[in-house]
Image 1: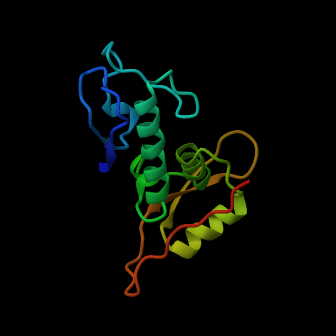
Image 2: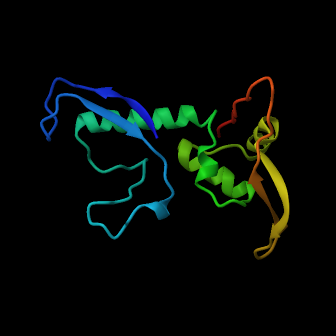
Image 3: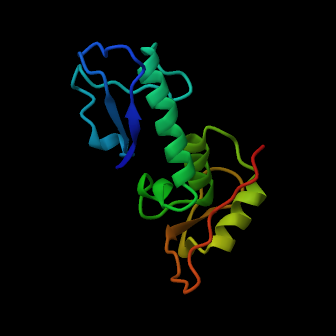
Amino acid sequence: MEQVGAFADGQRHPGGATLTVAFVAVVPATVLDVANPDVAWFSVGEPPTLPPRHRVMLDAALETLRTRMDYAPIAFKLLPAMFTLSELQQMYEILLGRRLHKASFRRALQGAVLVEPTEEWRSEGRGRPAQFYRFAPRKRRQGRRPVRFDLL
């Protein structure tokens, strides 16, 4: 969880507040109670109609999340302990809101030393089996290298 900022647009919030402090947090879907009528999932790309201040807060939260992904293992927290590189790339694409170039994505992961292969594989249908990986960054004395991807 991270504070995104404080927002005031000169208009009163429907709840009466003149100032709103926004936070962003990423949680797996299994954490929220979807049976609760006050909770709803929606696509970040197509949010429901929001008041202007709320839309600014949503945009700022997304920007904060996407900037932070270069330095924090956010995508890994949303996956099971073992995952395929395709699943990891799909998670990054969802969080970034953009498609990534497959070869560039894999080179960036290798350069950042964020994953290590396991001895397990998954075979589904035709084609080559997918190897499972796990999040396992190596400690570096010179600091962490950010993850940079080429976008499609």
